Image 1 (spheres, rainbow, N blue to C red):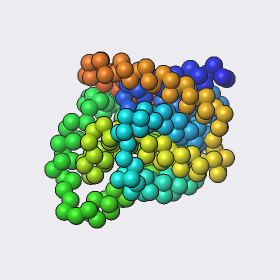
Image 2 (cartoon, one colour):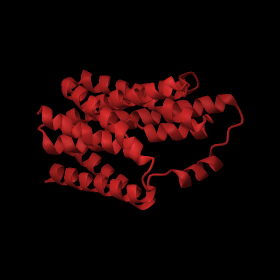
Image 3 (cartoon, rainbow, N blue to C red):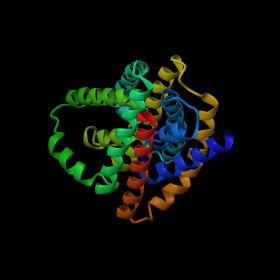
Length: 257
């Protein structure tokens, strides 16, 4: 079992380092396919991974003074509340329903990444036109609401929402890119921690396995991130899109068979 956990963790770190996506995109389908974890346990355990790996990343950014949690606290507050609510919803969803929903989510994400690549340039252009705020109060309220929605997604699907948090920091709170990346990693860890606690209260986490997965993912993620910065973005998007698509199809079939 330990070898399986380390292997899944290393692969998760590689994909996370390449894409910046939440580790849930790999952990949940692989744990569901390779182990006897229930879908609820796989999601709860993936949230532990989304605490450990982002904390390792955010520490590096903190050392370079590229974290501003004081300004991003409103997203964190909203996400903590939303994650608890989402975890409560997930507890009432059947294994087949939750697993099937996650599998379909993976398929959709795989198709989108395969078609559009890993960059958010087109989305960024749209958000710059839409996200116009006249007062600081409007920014704070928007950040709270968006953080809350990210939290719900985290609680239900186990996704840390790092990409969404990054976009909120850049286009709602006007963070510089490096500070946005470091701060989003820290907020994702906080959000995932709230979701993990919610799942733990329902008995749906495997703490030891989560630690093994998280530490393995943190280590391999640092190496794959270096490769991602040199790789062709379009090719990388095709590869990751196919990986997510295949994992989603397998997970959907296993849950509806």
